Image: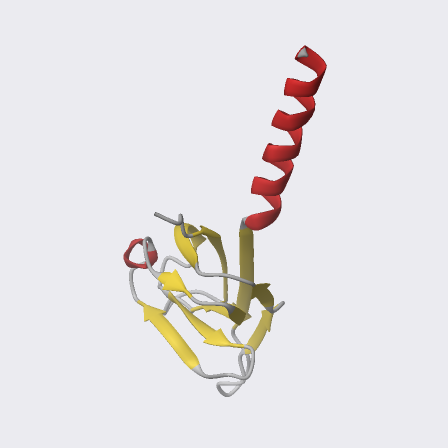
Length: 114
């Protein structure tokens, strides 16, 4: 019985971990306003809530994989609690005025069904 409970618990934790998503992006200052943007698109299959943001002290934006703006934040804390719907997204940090590179990590978790 203990073994079965342990297996169910481990399986539940694995399913939960798989449903959380981390979107990452970076921006490097270029010459003559030719900044280099890097991000790997993330796909979410249900509504997800932003619950944590790391980096991007000057803010960041979220766009669809096709480049349409979804959200833009000057203060990363303002993103917490926002919902992204099913789709494919990229995130990019704003560059601080005195910086040459910035990075952002946006942590998403499924919205609880109530």
